[in-house]
Structures are given as structure tokens and as C-alpha cells.
Length: 210
Image (cartoon, rainbow, N blue to C red; front, top):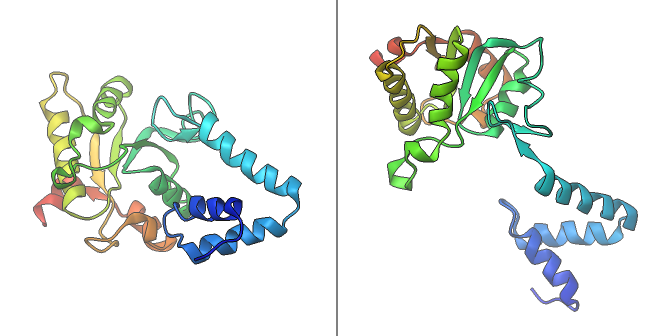
């Protein structure tokens, strides 16, 4: 792909770094910006820059936030005694879009995957254990992708909770398998994901049926 402008070429190359964006799509986006009012382009760039530089992660649940504590954790109308454990921020967005869950979240920041070099120490597992002992929630819902890595992560956290010197009476459940094994939460339709949350089951029952 030949360019008559190095500025245009640089912009296309930067857009093409984004996931799922090829050179042709990047060129289309850049040419669109080229025809857009300069003030709108500046507002677009400013929004991206501020997002990257000013966004925070909730000190309680590790969700993205504009403050030290996110709007979900600080919402008095949410059920603080229920914690939904998810892999990443996209899963929080997916579950919130179902409008079927009124509790809080805990974002692990990934799942245990030795083949990918991801171990428990690289995830927000210890803060979760500490949070459970400190807040003493009624229920811990695991909403992880239904695959081997997700199951391994659930098993590890459950064992770590049971091995803690301080006993916990928290009810541990997982979303029902309306989502096919090997699927991903963010691609599930809202109805299926919502029903999976409503029909959650004890982790022991889920593991024994595998």
C-alpha cells in the first residue's frame, strides 16, 4: 500500500495496531477522520488520551473506574453481599447488559493458564480471598468462561478459601451451563447469559458433573 503522505501512512499504521483492524479498515477510518471537522477529531483524540491517562481501577473489585471506588461498588442499591467473579472487564460489561444481576463484581484480570504462562500470582486472587474474609459475603458467583482454564481457576480459588485458617461460610456457585463448554461470556447473547446467572448452581454440583 503506497502513500503520498507520511502523516497519512503513520496514522494508518497506528490504527492497524488495534485488534481486528487491518490496513484497509485503518485507511478507511483515517480517511473518514480526514474529512471530519477538526474540532471533532481533536475531541476524539482527547477522549482517547484522557481515557488512557486518567482511568483508574477500582481498589475493591478491579473494575475500570473514574474514582478509587467504581460506581458499582459505591452504589447503595447494589447487593453488596453478592460477589460475581469474572475474568475481565468485558465480562462485567456483558453481564451488566443483561440487567439480571444486582450484586458486585471482582475482576481477576485473567484466568490460570500454565501453557500461556499465567499463574495465580499474576491474578487478583489474593485480594479476592482477603475481600471474602473481610466482607463476609453471602455468595460468591463464578462467571468464568466454561473451559479447562476457567474450571482450573474456580477449583484453585475454592481450595484456597477452604485452606484458609479463618473459616468462611460463603455460598460458592457458578453460572449454569446455558453457555456451551469452550465458549466465551462476551459472545453469549444477553438472554442466555441472564438465564445462566439466574439458574446458577453450587460449584460442587458443577464439578461433580464434569
